[in-house]
Image 1 (cartoon, rainbow, N blue to C red):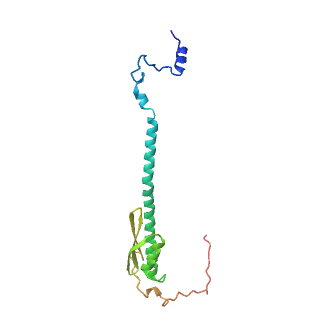
Image 2: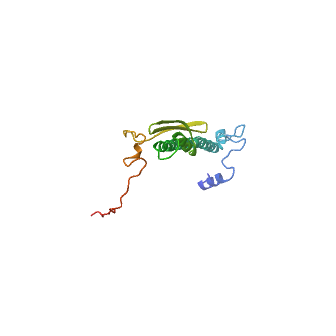
Image 3: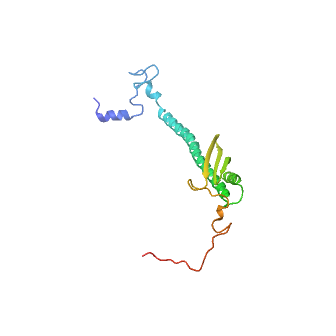
Length: 181
């Protein structure tokens, strides 16, 4: 009878616990008592990790351009807003020039091109687009006075003080500031 300490020492030796050729459990290919399954699974964890890593890389390669597409879409909307505001400033007379030319310049500076420019009174509607990774991204913006405000015709801009004349300022009475309380 072998004591437990001797059995442990025997199993700790190199090659211990493996049947030798001709012993019980050894087949014609030397598979041993564990069978061919254990040997066939060697390296399976590495292949599993390689598959997971490839999936993560593929997911990243698909996700990053899509996130870029969202950012470019926001940039195109900003270009449409800037173009509409530039055209509205020109229509209102705050800036000299032609409305659609101002819109085209503003869109170009923001990396987009104007596809449509419509001026109705003081309201300007501008459509712009930009190509990104084979996609055409479009945006539309409107600028002008708020809805419900009656449109102001030419000459109404002059105001009650006469044509292109600013209101007169009076310095007879200085401004007073009173602290609350």
